[in-house]
Image 1 (cartoon, rainbow, N blue to C red):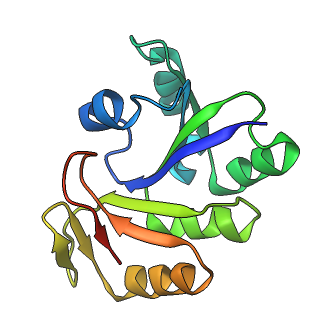
Image 2: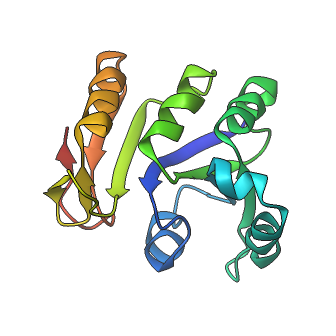
Length: 155
């Protein structure tokens, strides 16, 4: 049975903070990128998968439905996973489709019209807040944190 070491929303997907800070420890061996658009684009998907990590991490790309299906199939097999969702709505869709999460880190959501910063790296609009409210109501711990050594702010 696999293990989810971190589930994070970060619209930058894989970047330095994810690869150098969040994947360290806990035996993480795989990063799952969950973004419907990337999963549907064979060229972009191949770029992510072929890079893998210089640190030896495998990278897999899924849609929200595909990652839920992988979980239901065998709880990610032997993978010890950091899951990076591009959008809060995709995290919710994966959970609704059967992915089981205890916690969700929201660490990078870019500023867009009609959003406000809750921490310097996360700007939320009403739709995102409503989804987070629902997830929290379902018992999932929601928190904001940019990097592991920064302050964790509970939702």
